[in-house]
Image (cartoon, rainbow, N blue to C red):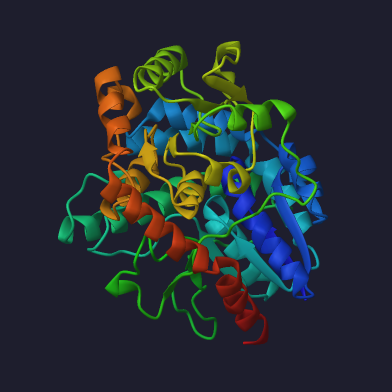
Length: 415
């Protein structure tokens, strides 16, 4: 069968779906992965057919970080950029689905991809890397993670869905008038039962160890486990990385992934000084932010990137922003996670890390100080915490998120 996968965002939004594409291809399906064009070379390493989409997710990252934990600002900022590239992205995505028998879609394609599938009379599956579109009293919505459990949390989830639907579709009629050749169909919500079409399956590509399924999700949401993508067999660590690892005790890994923050210098200085004062070594994965061109030393190694599945088991702990993918990698490695959320769903994941005993309480990036980071670093010396997170790692490594998702996808193809 021909399956098209549509995703958009940073590497953390693309990598899980590449893992799924590889799994589906191994099962004999013809798979096309549509994602931002900057990931073409990354996907090419795994021999998955790639459909490049317009725009630069780095711009979304900047808007995302400027909005911080303000849900209204976040939606407005991301919405403005998405609207500016919507026409070109839609054309590319639709072309990628031209001969598809099924469409798999992530967060930003939730409504559009489902409506396209509906118009073409083919099934679709929604896969999210965080819990959304499934109200529950057990967890707060990721954009309002400070809400208490209970009725307020349930209302917050409902509100999130309304904002997504009305905010995301507010300009659709105008686009339809301007470009009827592209926006040629009505929009539908995927998770409503409207016979004869069944509700679209909703999957959370998250470990049930980190996010035990809520009671309200029974029968309508699958919490599959993380979608892990291991480093290609061709990966060989540089001599610099190998030498650093061999020169002393296991280091701390510091990574903020694709996050770009206007106060990056202050954050970097706090990190370096606090790690030094704690007597630790560190490998800093600089990502998109670059860390101001800082140079390596005996205690600090700066690298643009390294495969998490290879590096993290060789580290003592990880300091990160709380992105879904990085959180997954940290938990899988079974090492303490210190989460410094920048915005969006990251505080939610930081709180989940704390709740399952895999790290200390998260410290929001705007509240980060040397004493707070020093306190968090002290927690990674706690033997009980280290034992708990090793157990979490064992459980996560036993899960098969890709396999569970493939079973749902294939059931849609035959059902």
